[in-house]
Length: 286
Ligand code: MG
Image (tube, rainbow, N blue to C red; front, side):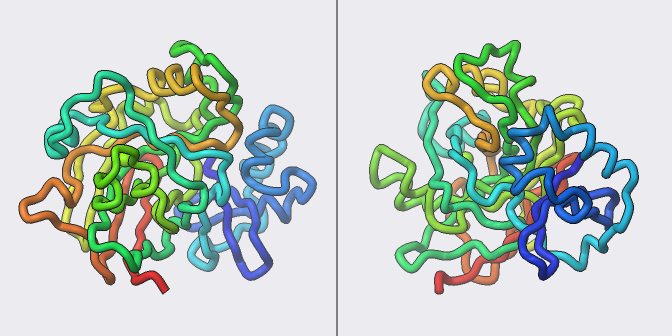
């Protein structure tokens, strides 16, 4: 199933995307089901059958193009992101292959919608895109084994780990350069894990103004998602709705000579096979 958060002029609603151009409001069909996406994910074992029934019925469909799709999870508990996790991106970064998984956090306030603007911050002239597969945690927990990791994932979406390169690299700690407002667009919806046969076999592409800059496959992850979940859950409890940004392939703006940073008006499109696409236009910080 494809689960969306959307607005059709009646406040935020949960929705089920039922075809290429239709959506059903879960919030209208079953208002008692969940108050938001994290609540829905946390209660999934209890509500899945009902959601599936509403999905199969596909009654009272709404034109997908008539609604505003929002970030499927507007305020996750945490956003964990791994750096230097595709060989070609490691090469273009000139940072060397990390001995250990390199993790940083993105502030939860960096989340923005799948078609909302990416801010070019007042203090910045080095904003860059990073196409990434994003895993959404379902059951979560601590000390999740590699073998048990797949069962802890609720679903997947497309993400852009937007990065302010100067702020990223002027200190050893990357988190600030990764955490500007609007620098974590996600969406366009969450595809539940049962619909993705293998998350390590998905074409992933990043385009700027229609020019293909990144074109890879999640099979090229250095540490795959199961390694990642096993590793970070040794340190922290993963919870329903937490997001894991799994790394970006080569082709980021900083990898070009001269570097190709984003400027106002640039349109960044990230696509992943089976998960859809997000498209964000850059605009100056108000
Ligand atoms: Mg990244």
